[in-house]
Length: 486
Ligand SMILES: C[S@@+](CC[C@H](N)C(=O)[O-])C[C@H]1O[C@@H](n2cnc3c(N)ncnc32)[C@H](O)[C@@H]1O
Image (cartoon, rainbow, N blue to C red):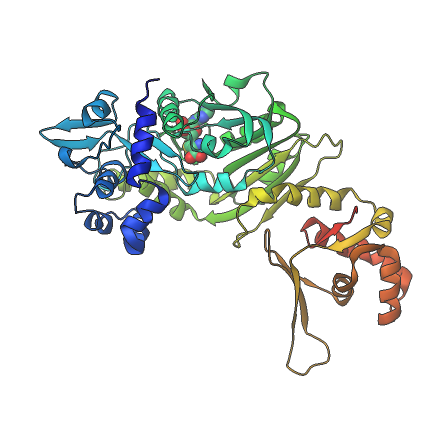
């Protein structure tokens, strides 16, 4: 590749076309409106014709700008060079972008197809979508553990590679859409990343026989009656694509390897969604953790994705909406869940799967502690009662206790343990677990601690010893307590 991407990057950075630079230039109100896809405040804020304002209008807002206002800096590419590279069109002194070029939170830049906004022409079927909330969501979920080989399946504009860069020694990125790979290569070049092994093909076909320490995918998870747009729909029936990803990923994980996916799943009348998603994970041979972060009813879901393709207000809106709803109805769909799926090839002959709903805010990035979450789940499952009573239990860092009750009462009506970090879970506990939380610091085995608590509370020590493992196992699985190895 020629040096245009490098010179373009220098120009973008010099002009302040970065996440912080754009936010500062737009101000809170216009930046907030833009996050809601409303461009009018941003257009007003960038009307001066200054270099940064011009780049924002050209690359982000997608409106024509005066060719003389486009900055080139001492070594930056000229409008003619940008036009020759297919990044802009220049006509009668006006310059229009042919792509969307956005700064990203890693410090790099991403090239995708132009954003569609209400009133724009219909999306092409092979539209390459820019990075957004879901991209950031997956990037936050992925483990921070250094990886040898990493795979980004369905790379699109290449955003996950920007996050993997520096964390993985080798990066492979795949996509079924050749245009996506073309634009992703440009994103990586402008972001100063080289050596990515980009391969075209569906699902795991391009990496047959390859294994990875880390697999990430923000797949085309949208569930619709027809695969109209490659960027969001695979063409497979219902939620089969996500199911296939889960089922096939383990064959491409190296020992100890981890896979993180975003997914959608159906809620079908008469079926518990946990059984559906649990069924995908069971039998993979991997430990698994699936979390439903959100659920939408059929109408909310259809509206979201019609809006995403700027189809509200178009002549076909009503028909598309109606067809989609009719298909959901025929399939007995009551809602669609969105969430995270993590698989870990721990090599255990007794893999553990946890499927849960958890919609509350969590500490970011989840990737900073996701390995510990999975370890807690598997530890809780694998410890026998006897092992648990022999183990030295410790309260996890950042767990606080809340006692709630009528003022002046001797005993609280409710005791809650709350995590102030990680998933920030809270749980109502009994007096024994609360007493344990107060004393277990990893120094003493659980058995003697329970005996001491029994003496204080007047409970039968053997009763307490028999009941405690069942009460403590969920608290270990959810990260309130851990087994001390020190
Ligand atoms: C939602 S976009 C994700 C893009 C990017 N990775 C991100 O995190 O924002 C899904 C990507 O999957 C690709 N895709 C669609 N069907 C696929 C398939 N059968 N196999 C592999 N990739 C596919 C699309 O072309 C698109 O680039």
